[in-house]
Length: 96
Image (cartoon, rainbow, N blue to C red; front, top):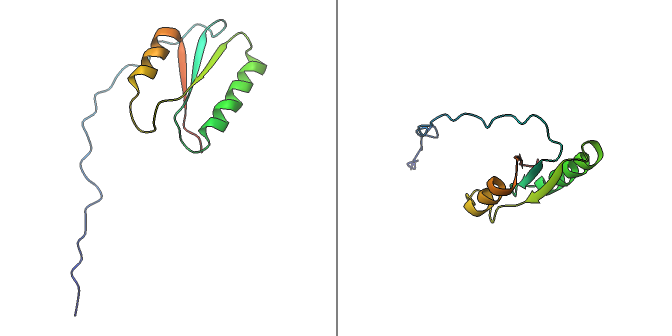
């Protein structure tokens, strides 16, 4: 006896997206605070540590701070506020 199958359409409906301008480019990084944001993806902490070490070797005048959100895939307004208040730039690391 044949069984009935339910098939779902994987295309879904894309959300409406409003474009935003990029942040203005800094003239340089010397003396600036750059936050390395570990986005809690697999191996992203390893990548952020390597990036921190690269900055220490190649751009030692840049102040590097590492930070993580409270949980993955969830906006962390407190973390964003810290970066906005204390930082000049941020690099988001997503790992492998």
